[in-house]
Amino acid sequence: MTDLMVEATGVIKDYKISQGLFRGKEILRAVDKVSLSVSRGETLAIVGESGCGKTTLAKIMLGLLEPDGGVVKLCGKPLNEISRLELAKLVQPIFQDPYSSLNPRKTIGSIITLPLKVQGDLSPETWKQRVLTTMDLVGLPSRMLEQFPNQLSGGQRQRVAIARALINRPKIVICDEPTSALDVSVQSQILNLLNELRKELELTYVLISHNLAVVEHMATRVAVMYFGKKVEEAETEQLFKNPKHDYTKTLLDSILVPDPRSARKNN
Image (cartoon, rainbow, N blue to C red; front, side, top):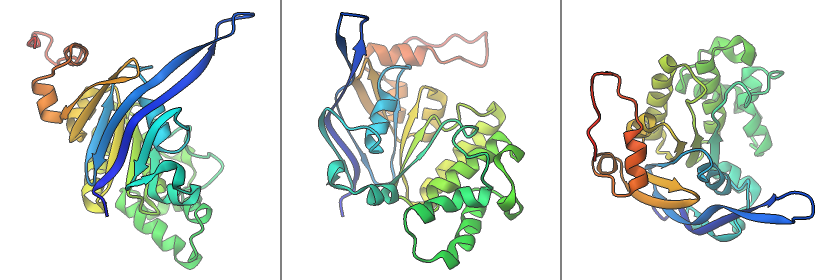
């Protein structure tokens, strides 16, 4: 089995943008010939400002969008040769807003159980125990099984979303701004949980983020995107210490320093 869990080569995604009445449509290239790879157990962070194409690239990896060019492989197999069911078992997302990604009409138990039903698990007698085991894994007490999302805090809801993503033990998890909707006091707990789960379950993460503090804490490698292109990629420590591209330097210079009397050193 290959150690390359995600491999993207020359990926292109275009959108047709209306220019107004009688003016036809303009092509906007959201992802422009991006190539990257993620090995087993790694966390690759894709960073850049809003509109740089990082979320579009994540949706392509999830099979939610079809690329207009290039090839994406998961575990060595081209994405277009993977069935929807196989893809759902292989890769799962964790979205940024746990307030909108959970069905408010469903109990926590039924939300976490849903992937087992949808993905055709043939052992329904084991579902409840698997749900309880997964809840314990993400730090949710069993008493929440029959509660509804509106009875939980933001951090607890995100733990439910993580449990739902992991119930069928996927190999790859796409984390799209997993803490941006949470209070600062809760963010570190969720980040530490994700790091622990990566090691314990041997997961591979693709982290989409504009928060460089989160990236520095979680990622093993970082790819920087700018106007749809990948402009730099390096090990996390190397990129933060010695960025090569001017845009990367600008991103790092924009990080707020807790001490207002401290001046960030220019690279």
